[in-house]
Amino acid sequence: MINHVPVRVIRMIFLSLGLVFLAGGTRFVFAADSLYSSLLESPVPFFHTYNLTSLHPVGKRSVGSPETGSQESLTLDECLTRALQGNPDYNISREQLRASTGDLLLAWGMYTPTMFASFGLSQSNTAFLTTNPAGNTITVGRISKASYATLGISYTWFNAGDKYFGLRNAYYLRRARQSQLRSSELTVVNDVRAAYFNVLRQEKLLEAARDQAEQLGEQLRRAEKRFKLGEVTKLDVLQAQIDLQNQELLILEYQNQVVTAKLNLDVVVGGGMGVDFNLAGDFEIPEFHFNVDKLAAEALEKHPDLENLEMQIKQQQGNLWMGRLAYLPVLRSSIGYSRNQEGLTFTPDLQRGRQVSFSATWNVLDAFLRFQANRTTQVAVNSLKYELIKTRLSIERDVRQNYLELLRLSQRNLTLAESQKMAGESLRLETRRYELGSSSMVELRKAQADYLQAKVDYINSIYDFHDALSNLSLSVGRDVSLDLE
Image (cartoon, rainbow, N blue to C red):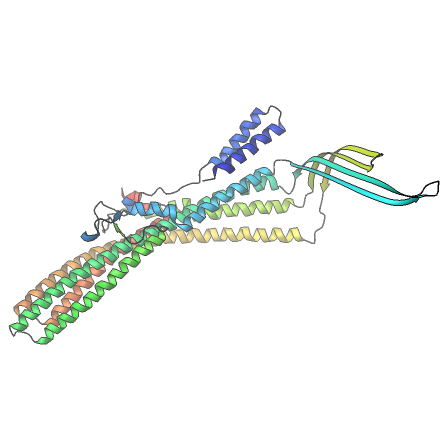
């Protein structure tokens, strides 16, 4: 938001202009105050309207370990709220939008006259020797003073259409930066989602690694029991010990990855979270039903990147019109009052004057500089139009591609869920066979590795689905999870 002191100063400027130009100008004061409100009091758009708890269902229960239950438990929506307040990239876009207010004021200022005033004062003291009639040499001094003052108002009636097209371009610039802000928000939200669900994924992988360590510990106890009974060799015990030690190293690696993922989330939200927090959420895949044709049509109509390019094209078209109108003369007029006083102290010469002038300046030939500038601007307009076509094609492709990827990942998740169940059942049977002595340690280890890999693949498939869902929102230009409600 704009600071209170500059706002009051600018309000006073608008009101003072009304009093200067129209005596008793109540209507102008109201008009100036209305203009002030439209330019300055309109809040910076805050486009965070996502209902992200529906995009990624987040519950109340904590997914952290019991020993960290006293830590802060954050939902996805809370992380997004923090990011849209503290993320540096998003705040840079908001500051750029704030800067457009200055461009608007400058454009409106071209419709007001230019007032100027000057004052100067000088004095010259001169001393010289002379001879009087009596023949004596005497020193004579002379003081010469001069002063001047000027007060005037000038107004440019026409200068290549810069008033009309400059004001239009200022509004187009503000709309372009609003689109950039929306695009920046989409990017920030996408990064927060990725970091948030990466933390959940790493915690699930750590939980799976700990479960695997418990199974390997039980396997070691079974191997030692069978070794005491003479049913297996010492090799089975050594293999079980090696597997358990390797799994403990893997647990340490996953613990480091959890901390790294939390640090990445802290960076995306703009800091202040550290790593001493838990995330409250259900790591699962929701049901969805999207109409990809409607999503593609909506993206082509409302995507912020497309609107940004359209505003840039309109700005360049305005610049092109100003370049064409530069072949016409510049029309100016001015009104002034001047006062000059100069001469000796005892013989002052006072002059006063009033001036009214009207001038037309026409640059007939400028070595084709205007032609070169207009041709460059025309090329820029055409290039932006081609870029707009390219972006429209890319957005429609991305929407349909991300939708197909979402379908594939949803089906892949169902398949991996079944694979995990079958791998778990296979491990249970293989463990029973090993206890009965009808299976070797090699076969049991393979069943354990298959089950762990199936569990890891299933966890990663959930993360991949949420990542693809975020990418679909990014390509459409809004939160597509609202369609899930």
